[in-house]
Length: 204
Image 1 (spheres, rainbow, N blue to C red):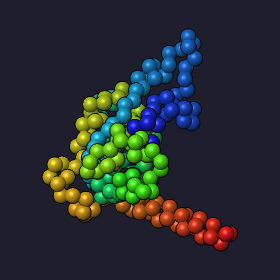
Image 2: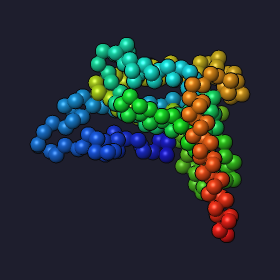
Image 3: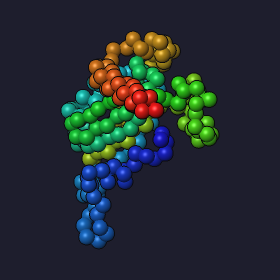
Image 4: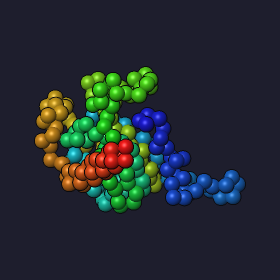
């Protein structure tokens, strides 16, 4: 789903009736009237969890410290968190609430023998050695959105050259404010998975 345009402004506007499409000729679209716009943030380095946690607090609760008018309203996408290198992070933000929870494994950690047919071809544009398909892809929707400010803020959360050189084994040692909710959600997913497998085995 990375790079497929899954998280688009048009789709975001359809969620829960938010920013319904204006009928032509009747009134100014909300996206224009209220200065709503969006962009997709992408990067090929992992986020430092502690720096990302701090940046999200600023973007959500103290945006005026970055820009007098810029407000992030919604956001959704995939996150590569350095301290959780094997799993995609599923990020979602609405208003002042956000979540960053474990998603599927990155294809880079799955044996290619287990890949679906044609996946290697389809995923080629997203593949960057030595980290495979790991990357950041986050759609940001906001009011009077300052793309440069938001991008700069998120870029500051990426690992530095020195941190990248330290490698994934050392990334696991990074302070991670998301760990409690991350691993709690992971435990729930694993429990559901085992219960499903047990139920199938019992009924076979």
